View 1 (cartoon, rainbow, N blue to C red):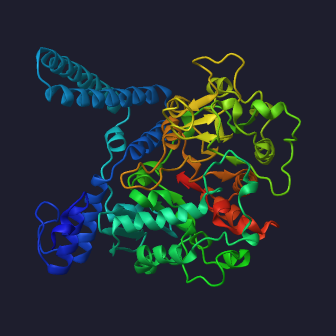
View 2 (view 1 turned 180 degrees about the vertical axis):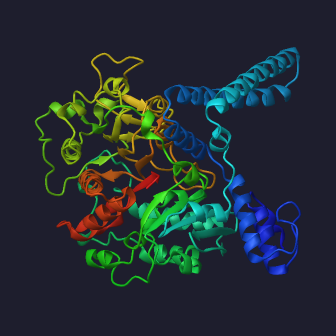
View 3 (view 1 turned 90 degrees about the vertical axis):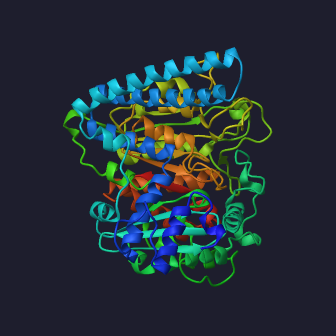
Length: 562
């Protein structure tokens, strides 16, 4: 084994791969006895989960626990524990800084932090005892044990395959596990090259070359009028290298559960190309005829492997109480130029508005209106049988309305508006959804529902639709968090699954995708397959051929239980 193969967080996996070829033994990783290919696969799979646990995964575990518990008092205790854990982490950081300093002030800070940590740990221990008395499975769900390959197989439904990736410095490790089979391989893929290929595809998926998604999209060239295509050869190369060696496990699956890692969190697997592409990359018909992976199987995304076990535990709904409402929606916020002479009720031919990054503005009131969101929410309400009072549009779509709404009995909650990433508005330190600015802004309503504020909502929704931009992931650079603050926050608040976007999304295409998905769900289609069918209709059947391009049909992914 060369020196390069033992660097980075995946060293133990590379060690195991070396064993697979040499028959050696890696103490502390593999079970006693002569290693076999299957035993190495299983041991490394468990070790990998410990190395890649994330904040998003912990949030999803807590959401699953609240779903199972159906107990408001228990949910409150869990929230207290999470807050205490965050406080303990902050104090650990303060302790590290104080220990490295000198002087009486530093010594006093060390003593303060030690006392504080002891108090916090005692509070956590007391909460654990209180929670475990009423819910014995707490330990497993909040501090989950990694799943073995066998346990994953026992949890999967027929026709499902879990795909798990881990990107190291020079290799990408990929597992494919079905209910009856499992395999893994290492793709020799230097991380810089992987990032470069994903970045190339992402540039082709942005709605404008400058990624200014709150501007009208009429500056973006139409597929049929220019060489504005999508490099399907790169997408096919990624498929061949990452998933091709696992075709025996993947082919024929009708639902892929993807647990991506590192740079791969920035790219929906549905736009990988499973067969060699033919025709011109800028030809709409060639794009429609492409063997996209989403054409083969529905997909959901999980932040870690053990989330599957947590989400699929049987939910006792007897304590949820009372009838449930099918839908609540917030959208079509009013901005400064909503009162101008320009028509906003209809989208004119060739003029589309994207839900995302603002362009050359310094206030929320300068954002572009989103004419498709009102129609989208009304259609969603119609499809689900919601009452008029459960749709908040225009001047009613305020942050106050969102934070004051009782959403604990709602199955589907939709937010159709602009999404902002941290830093895209002066002073905005975290991602946020934008609503109608209040007449008198204040701490409770500044027109921005931040990730922190979203985490404070009380939800038990089967589906949250974040019909906005950039709500799924970071940019795919090494070390980037794979699930954005907004998505994590709604998971924390109690959502079972969330529809989120990977890049700035087209207003019209978004409306078609979300309403098509909910229509399929109302007909009894599972959430993941409902999204897949809606994507394929937009890609293949829309009269406007530009929607054959994956920038329009591929931005959304379903996170959670599909």
